[in-house]
Length: 362
Image (cartoon, rainbow, N blue to C red; front, side, top):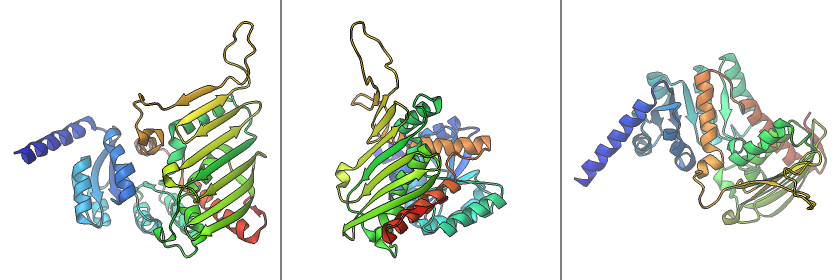
């Protein structure tokens, strides 16, 4: 009886979702791995612009389970059959880069836009192939650099675009995690595993705020096949400079992400994607007979906040952006080209660290 009651509740919920999503874009998904289940699928029912029409995975039980949990009408184990049968407006592809390349290519060849996780592929050449197909078919791909859509980084971007920071002069970042096993991706070069699989996130964030990177010099240190570190000095095309420190020497439990953006007599600090401090040129309040200096404006999550983690760190908003671009027939703000440039920068960091010389990107 209890099971029957739960099934009735789930059916009612599905009907409610379908009713609420009339006029939404038809989206299908490929891939039901751990990342997709933890971070992607939970966002979809909350996005009114998305009607999840089908779920696909090679493992039948995963496809069935996620279709049922998240309100998809049908499930498949053959993505091409799903695409040809359901004719979605867009497809979310989440999995290992080789899988994303093979599947993404066939979807783009049908003229259907894709959302694809980072890194797009392991090679620059394959990423450029996807971009070329998208251009030929007059469609596009959005890359899952979710940090661009994180709430504190969006606040920082808004401050910069308003002109309150002045010209960006310097960007500094520490990005540290725990051991990153090479077998996770089975890359031939272990030194590049965390750089390509994880640290491209922060490389893209540097480009998001600073623009194109002109030149860089990197140093490298390793204490085991799972623990690597890079220290990178770089110059942007704008003339601004930057310093990036990444490593897998620390602990996942104490994941450390700190970004500082200097302007002209003003700066922004984002700490752990949970706190933002903005120090403007001028104090925003005056107090009689008190000399106020360095009066910051702060944003932070708290125990009473209603902000969901997937909203704060960007997963929800990147998927909502994907749906909006499908609905309004416009290109996304983070494109396959951005994925290519992040890969090129990562390979340049590795090349510089091994050759011990600066690398020009432009």
